[in-house]
Length: 81
Image (cartoon, rainbow, N blue to C red; front, side, top):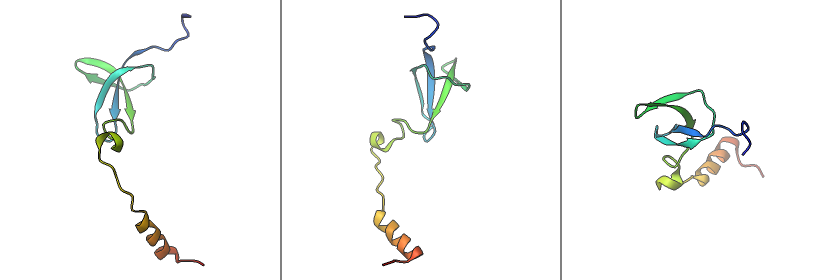
């Protein structure tokens, strides 16, 4: 490997924005935020969705009411022919 061209591979913490779950892993992502976890100060990377909050992994699937949305649209704007 060439020296000086590879990003730093280090321990980081990912925080799920929806659940607040902290996931400790290793990554090359750059961040200015830090968090103290188990007595260590580690870089913090906030994420919108992770396995802790994604419906596929949690088993809490959401059903979209598309028929209700169409009826609401027609009620608001009228049905045009």
